[in-house]
Length: 145
Image 1: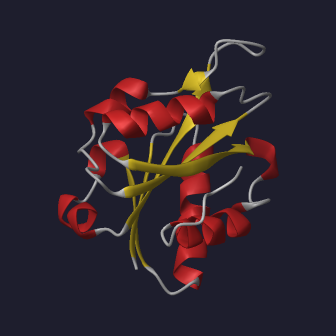
Image 2: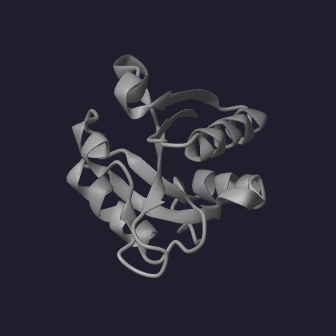
């Protein structure tokens, strides 16, 4: 399977998560490309069977959580009808940011399969299982997070 991992990162935590997700996908013998939102390889994305889209959690510590860098996410190329899995990194609390990332994916034209939040200090905990669930989701199994 051909998989694009696209991310928006402010401090490097989401970039690190994206690289770990890419490595886990390669371990499963997928063809993988990993890029920040402003450097996406359009030819690769056009042919991708699955997309991972990630960002950080922005907002106050206890409320107002939203996908960080939303303007950059919305400015990236569309992912029309591509099965898409979201991931976010967070410092203290993610709130409902994964649900809000689903809205971004919908605006980009992607088919939301589910997503997960990763605590930045606990990476890579859960990355391998998340990737396996995402690959399974392409075949109709919902991703849980």
